[in-house]
Amino acid sequence: MKNLLHIAAAFMFFGVLLFQSVVAQNYAAPYLQFSTSVEAAGFGNAFTALTDDATSTYWNPAGLALIKSYSFTSLSAINLGLDRQFQSAAFAFRLPLGVLGASFASSGVKDIMGYDDNNSKTGSFNVMNTVPALSYALAPNENVSIGTTFKYIRQDLNVQIDNGYSVDFGLRYRAEMLGTDVTTSVMFQNFSGKVGVNDLPRVLRLGAGINLKGIVAAADFVFEDMNDIKSRKILNIGFGYQATVQENFIFEARTGFQQTQYPSAGIGIGAKLGVLIAKIDYAFVTEPYSIFSQSHRVGLSITGL
Image (cartoon, rainbow, N blue to C red; front, side, top):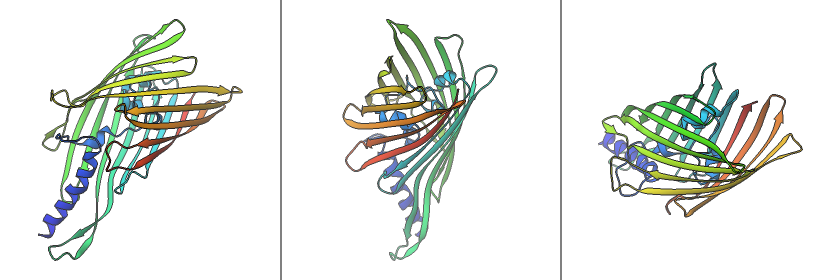
């Protein structure tokens, strides 16, 4: 009975994480949908076409091809509600041919109190999910880039541990029209993958973005499961402004709407320090669905020039 109560508690808190990404549908490993980019959070998760740093390991591995030297990014989520936690970090660097990237994400709930059938405390336990990933991107020419990400997934519910994998593919196309950078992208997340005995949903993201002298607009159209015709289709939109002040200081402002109705906003402040750019990013996010509170994302990024 004690083990059954632990199992019930673990699945209850795992269900809280699951609700983050889905309502009224079966969705394996929902934490895979949690963005690893503070910038993306500020843009309302309309980022598939905009990503160009180490967070491309999540958003679109084809974006890694834009890295000139190296890129490091990190993210910590604050005030997620219901004791949820999420952290991530990624690093990518240019090779003689292509760009190699690696990332790590951790999510879950810690210090869950367990009870026996007499309602007596049995001690605390954790529900944790870890996802290390390896990515590679290549640009056949200056307009087109392609990339792929392989993820190893470990899902620990304290009394049950499941392992799995996921393979993503991304494509990015950039062109200049009337002085405006126009980018379109396609991202297949979980093109192949499963956790334990459960197949992962195949997520398709179609992204578009424009950049006109620092004024940025983007949109993502998301099919949450290509295997289920009844699954949700979501539109995320985002807007931003990027400026360099006195050649060495960088300021960025962003806003967006997840599912066109949940607002977010963010800023980035950075500086050119010799051969690198260091930047601190912040985002304020309205979590989808009423059971979750508003939350925050903070992160540090370092980019080699």
